[in-house]
Structures are given as C-alpha cells and as structure tokens.
Amino acid sequence: GWGTTAFQGQISPILKQTSLHTMSNRCGKIFRYFNNQKEMCAGAHGGERDTCQGDSGGPLMHESNGQCYGHECSLDGYPGVYARVSYYLPWIKSKMSVA
Image 1: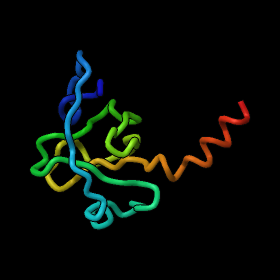
Image 2: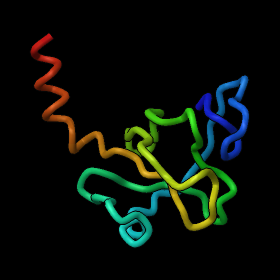
Image 3: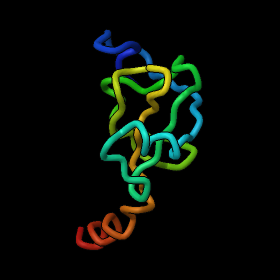
Image 4: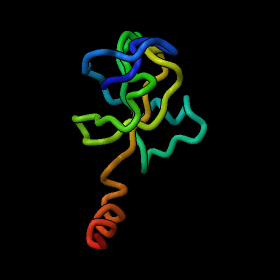
C-alpha cells in the first residue's frame, strides 16, 4: 500500500507489498468486536510486517479481502483485520444491479 511504514510515521513514496499469514482463530481473543463471519486476520509472526495508516481499504490478495483495522502497526501478536468480501457479495451485487 501507500500507507505509513511505521506507526504515526511518514507515508511511503512508493507502493509497497508484503506477505502475511492468515490467523483468524487468534483475532477473536485479541479484538473484542471481531466477527469471524464478516472478518479475517492476517499478520506476520513476530510482528515484522503489517499494514499501517493509509493502507485501509487495500486488498489482501490471498482471500480478496479489504483491510479494516488493527492495533498500531507491526505489533507482535496483533494482526490486521480484513473484511471478508464474500460475506458482503450479495449486497455488492444488489448495488451493482441498481447502477
């Protein structure tokens, strides 16, 4: 993404990408309002890679989900939370047919 490269840091002048692991089972224990039906989590073990401010809405290509929220950036044990686009697909399709 084009977001910051550190919590409250400067935005990236170049488009960045990274590899993350999905870990939805852990998120229900970390985030109070996490909804496994609508969301999933991804992060790097050890917290060395993550999305950050300005990356919201960017895709998680493995599952085709959009980034929603997390806790700061690259904190070990706090993966980013992504929307499960498949959950919202009926709504998306209904809005597309209206246009």
